[in-house]
Image (cartoon, rainbow, N blue to C red; front, side, top):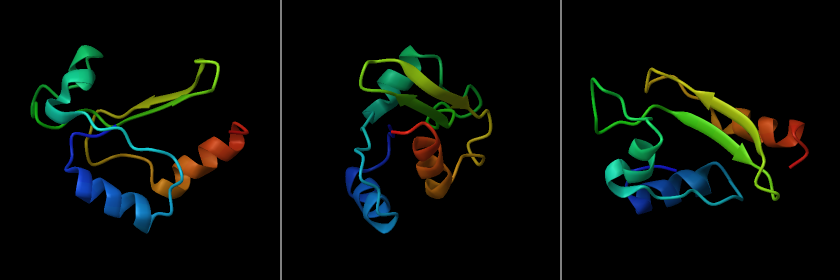
Length: 85
């Protein structure tokens, strides 16, 4: 989920050959509801990796305080593979 421009996200998804959707969060409304907004820069939410399986069970959660620290697309795919998703 990202507040970024949809076209930018489409290009990222295609460049990384991602097969899962990236959800849009204009204005960080969802991120704010979950307390993931960076107080020092409210435009930038804390990078959060959340994997929810088909049954709605949270299988992986990672929250980074620094917006410059986040898993790569390769790491995300490895997490999904490790979880068998």
